[in-house]
Image (cartoon, rainbow, N blue to C red; front, side):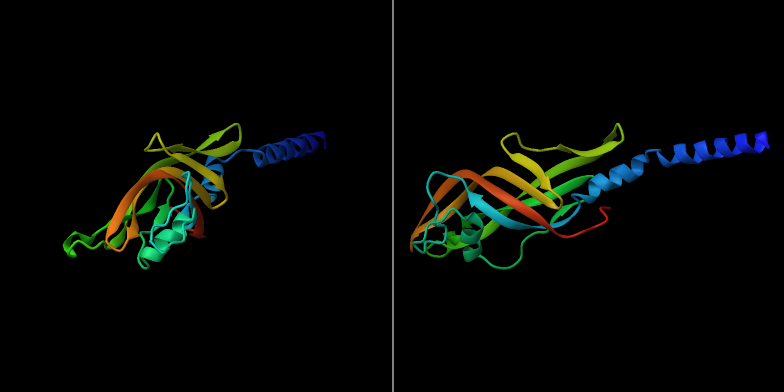
Length: 184
């Protein structure tokens, strides 16, 4: 009876100790779940000293996204984060009207912002580490399915029916996840 009692205690200890084992793959997956997926720009705020009027309608604003959306509607590249990297696209407006008899024709272009990421596990906890491409940008994984990026943007504004002006300054973009993906 003593042998069976010792075996029972030993089996219980083995079961209990295996319950506390940290599974690295599970912790990495937990960290990656917080960021991977397809994103859209929720907001973009011009952080320059004065408001901007990209579309030339006379209503200046700090809402960079709204001003850009008034210029062009339609296709925008897909912002996506996978298990190892991410791709965000920064919109900016340019004058494409060189062939239009001198009249401005504003259109949207994008600049790609790529980053690498890795899920790191230390002391039973997981976290994400990022390798970022630009020194003058501030990238933050600001919450579950949320990213902010402050970066310099150069864009063209319409100041009269036949005249444009370029501006350069910081814009704070907030990206939110619209679709979860497995990350591969």
